[in-house]
Image (cartoon, rainbow, N blue to C red; front, side, top):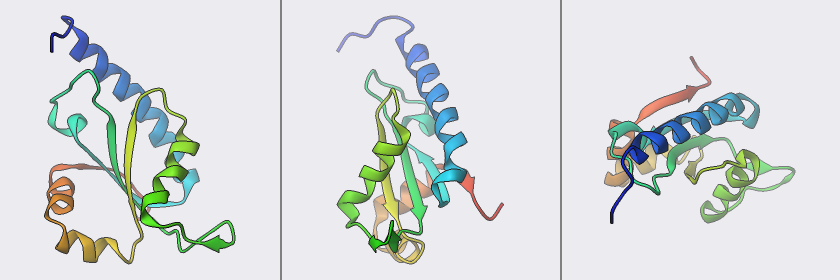
Length: 122
């Protein structure tokens, strides 16, 4: 697929600007930790590169209701971030994350190669 000259730099700039907006919201959204993965950590940008986030968030109860199933957790982020670029989130609870990072090689690899952009303990 042909790409315009300079588009990679433009896409990188778009993603970095949106990531700054996301980082500013994280403390207000009750997250424990957020790890940036994907093109923004490897530098391999494409025209449709999204911001990829692994989110650890205490979601046992959400607004007085039972926690949403894994496949619905991303909806919270889509709604609250209202981003101008695609953002993909994988949301785990603090209890399930340490278990799944041992069981899912792709998750472990993403976390090892990713960059922590928010940690409420630091």
